[in-house]
Length: 242
Image 1 (tube, rainbow, N blue to C red):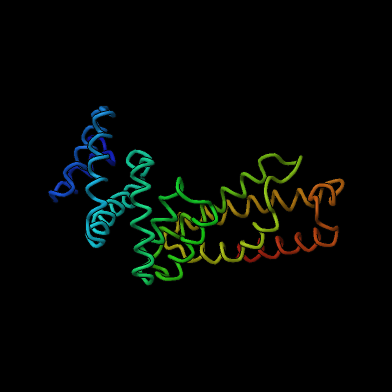
Image 2: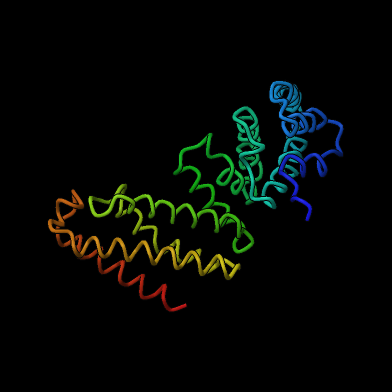
């Protein structure tokens, strides 16, 4: 059975159609061959030249590249700091010039994590979903996945304490469950619901059995802790009714 193509190989095949992209294709070819020094030389030349292009030509390159990365669910093999810096400028300019297009917001949220704070990435993904609605499946899946990872990180030191802002996580819960219900891939949807429920059960158990609730959750009063328990129970019940 043939091995699946790498992201670099796929780019070489599908983007080797435009003369202006020649140095980028050379970058991918040399990266694929393990010739990093030569690869980055071509990338530097490509970026220097591409900065002089018209906005529509820069956007055309970004569309071609991100469409391939979306299909492969791969970014680390291709994107470097210098390439990210070049692309982030294109995407932000794009959001200003065409604020009704969801694509640049999605690509900022999914691919530009080395150039942005986590809050900015979430805002970009939320904006993509607001603009694109249910067509923005990748943005929904990525945002819910990040939320689940935040919950998992928060509970990984139980029972000693929750790592992070639990009240903020619970505040985001209704929106994340709403997004989960809009995900069209049934397997991903069910996995997400199961993972969210698992983390909420852990949090609920921790809140109920912590010996000194006020100390455990630091700034919260006991009444607020009880209110939080009720919120979690409510959403556990509703997320179970699929």
